[in-house]
Length: 144
Image (cartoon, rainbow, N blue to C red; front, side, top):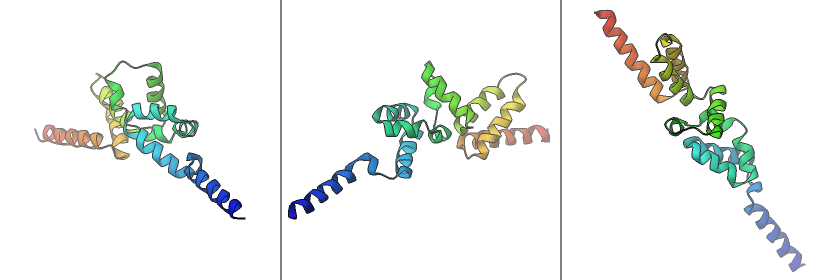
C-alpha cells in the first residue's frame, strides 16, 4: 500500500511539472508578455514547443506586439506576414507606424492622422504624444 501511495505522489508531481498542467489562460499570459515586447521573442516562442506555437498563432499576441524592431531591418517573408497580421488586427504599434508614414506622404495627411487617432484611442503612447504635438501646432497656426 505504501508503494501505491508513493507512486500516486510521483504521478501527481510529474503532472504538476509538465507545461500542459498549467491553465491555458496562464500560458497565454506568458506568451503574450514575452512575445508582446519583442517580435524576435515571439518567433522564438513558436520554436519552444507546440503549446506555445498554438498560442502565438491564436491572434492574441498580434494585437499587442511591438513591431518597432522590425521596421528598420530588411523584412523577411515571415516578418512581413507578422506585420500584416498585426495590421489586420489593428495593432496600435502598427497603426502608429502606418499613420506616421501616411501623415508625411503628400496627399495622405488626413488618412495618416486618422490612423494616429485610432492608435491613440487604443492607448499607444507615441501616438498620443504626436497627436498632442499636432494639436499644439495647429493651435499656433490658427492664432496666427
